[in-house]
Length: 334
Ligand SMILES: [Zn+2]
Ligand SMILES: [Zn+2]
Image (cartoon, rainbow, N blue to C red):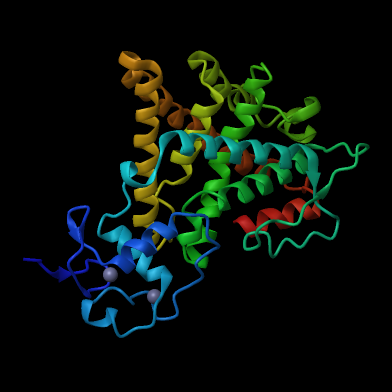
């Protein structure tokens, strides 16, 4: 005798019992397909509740966005079922390698449209000419833009609404940008964060003025790189930690669907890092995992210190405006 039940996602009657739930064939297929690289879902046209009430589900036209959120809601997104650890590590490392290439080799044109870079993918970069020497503002712009482009290519942003995507990018790029600056310096065997070709993190006026304490600037430059050196952290570990850092659901203004999604992905990345540590360091795996996670505290302290630095600069050096282009990139991110 075959038992029937309602599909936990769409509500149709089904005899298929998968992952401890009734799940119809079509929803199972939809969810598995959603895990492969797809373009962005686009927004729901029905107020985000197509799949909320079971009575609605069959009447409303198919909405990929709400259907996916419902799948997440009922717990279909779990590590073991949809993620192979080796693939995830390779994918995150590849994203970081591509981001680094963009950062080092590309630039933006002088008529770059700062109104569109949060929404467009890929961002319109141009090849950097060999005679171009960036100052710290220009490196900052490239650090932000290459990080934003990388974040859009993580697994989950394509499932976010366009509004949530903006909130996520605005929050995520900053912490991820700090982690990647520190990683670059660390891999170059430097003990402090700086931009390529020895360009300092801070503009001349901040360093030469008397108002901002030099040891405070050094703390920002050195604290995170120092932690990396202490732990002898690897490139792969930093890539995984970066994914955990940016999938933090505590993004201001994020919708509840967005929060649920980020929280699921943060758990997924976190348990992947734990698995990775257990496989690589065996009995020392749990301790290694805790040590790597403790980097997040230091990254967040550096984050807070940079915010303090920006406030000090605005107060004491209000006459020293960054370039127009830089200001206009920043305006989009605020
Ligand atoms: Zn279904
Ligand atoms: Zn919908």
